[in-house]
Length: 395
Image (cartoon, rainbow, N blue to C red; front, side, top):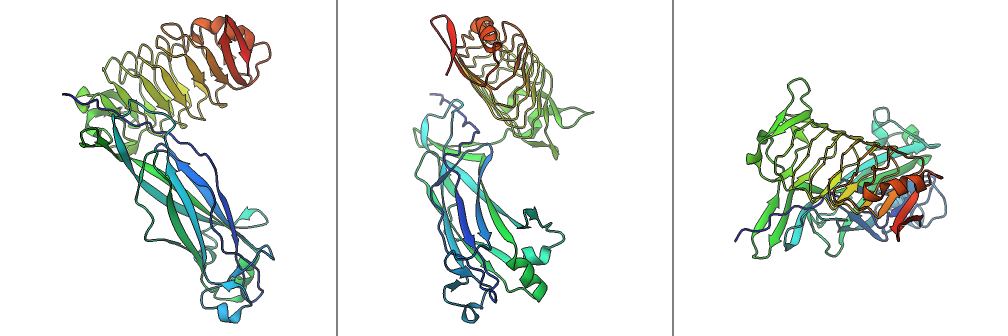
């Protein structure tokens, strides 16, 4: 029996953003600090990333204080050489694109950090202050997980922060009068998401091989065609022939018969008829996309479209002739052209939209679009609009 071959949505949610704080000390001056542990859970998804910061400031009277390594004996009571803290990380997905009928979906988790040193709210450029930046050490615990399981319990990621001893009085004075922020970036890597199927068969979600894509000879960052031999579940690579893809060209997947598609972050333009007349049921538009052109997703089986913040314009017929009942537009959208969600099975009864959006005509939002346009244009307020008993209201 043929398995239902499915794909995970690349999407991100953050239920709580954690701000952890500690402080550091110029040991001779006893600028105080503290040992701390992050509270709450950071939820990450497989499209973009979630970040949290650990802040080191030179505020006094906050408990113990971090001093350079091997300087505890030269410091006062409460001095510490290490600040320990923990982040609780959980992998959630807002939505599913034809989710595989299985369980125990496993993804590789990536962690990066950046250090920012500032004075008077001005960040010191690392190229000019490399000797100061190298004083701060961020040590990852060897027990930090390398994988997370979808919708499973949160996992703990532990870190230590230490400070090397400055080499001269100028470095001492600079570090003692600076604020330091360590930003941590967590991601789920989409190229090797693993799912255990209902018969315990392991299936990997991988990028479709670049050999099945044709890029423009004049603009090698644009896909212009796709070979269906690459499969009906398409994961578009973000890089083809060592060039970052920024455009899905006109007609590139026109009537290709594909069942699902993952569009990579970095794409800014989805062309005319790009995915016209396929079998897509859901799609996520990444935050990098600014414009969706004419009839781009016309005539699919779409019941749900997820738009991430960043999209600006949806052109005529882009999502016409589908089965959409709910539209949530990011606040970045400024114009929805005529017939963008026009007719077909688009009986849209819930629309979330920003203020002062230009709506092309009465068919921009499907069968009830005429009355919605009239109601919205009265004040052009941001909000969620609901259609019940033949009338629109805002909640």
